[in-house]
Image 1 (tube, rainbow, N blue to C red):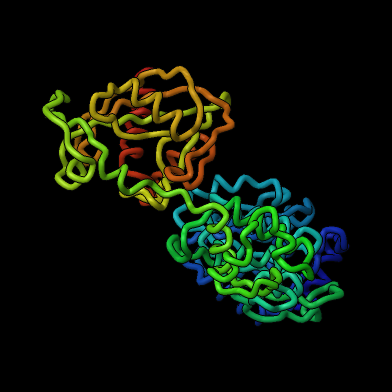
Image 2: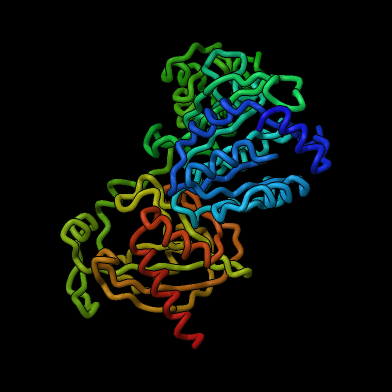
Length: 449
């Protein structure tokens, strides 16, 4: 929309821009087109726009053929957008984006997110929309220039800080361009900038403990001018030795360390929890016939390598609201790393029964004990990885103590969302879980008839 159109529209709908909501409307059409081009939208995309305002970017996003969800906090503007656009590909949601349930986006095959984030809540919105687990594959945000520089800063720069590292540890950040204040009505007091965030490949950086990394970074930047050896004395008593090992000066300050060096530093405090290769290789599983009768035992590697029939258990943990807890498998798992799986799952060891294994897996992976109910038994097949599986369910509110060597992340999800998620993104799940969930729903349906 041109400047005169924006001014006329605001008068027509009797809207005066509210400074506390960060309402600044873009009136440069060429810039708007350039911004939307950076999203590379197509007909298969689901685009979430934060703060659409009068729809300058919304119009162009819809022209790409993508479906658009526009989240607008101002009820007057939300109503205006509903009247202005009649496209079936647009949903206007009158809501505060900070209250939006991101989990619902997992039901879409591919999600991208964009918007002109209000300065006063830009950091909160940014952190919410990139938090794990994230269903979003690309972010293009207009931010206050100072914030954009902090996100994309390099070691040694004055803008380089804790926020830089916490974001860059999981995302590639590209500072696309500076956007002058003159392209907005009303004109803000400072310039903006456009940044693009894309998730880094899972194995881009060495494995590390996220909590330890975050804690060290926050302490390290709590007093920027202090040397790290003073700030981290309690966490790293052998500082001189560690500093030499990771290639930094003993008197280094926080902003001098690269992301890779911060990761090395956190691993010196607590090495990442990975499955013990020796223990895994020595595990022995009962080998069974087509009727699940034990006919012998073999090492884990042989069982998997030769596709021998064996036994496993899966547990579905629900909360009182009916949401199911899912785990994202650790990157160190030998099968299906970083895929979503049942609340707890594992093999039945040699000399062990199904029920015994189920209680053990619940304790080892989630750190809890609970009464387990047998739900159904799945036959060994290609879909289950040649595993006979007993599926169990229980109710537990948590909190859980997740085993880092087994689980990368865990969270509760509505059951109907899990079904839609599997339909939209089957590649994100372990095949055994998909089979368990399908059979579980089928039994529920049969029982309810």
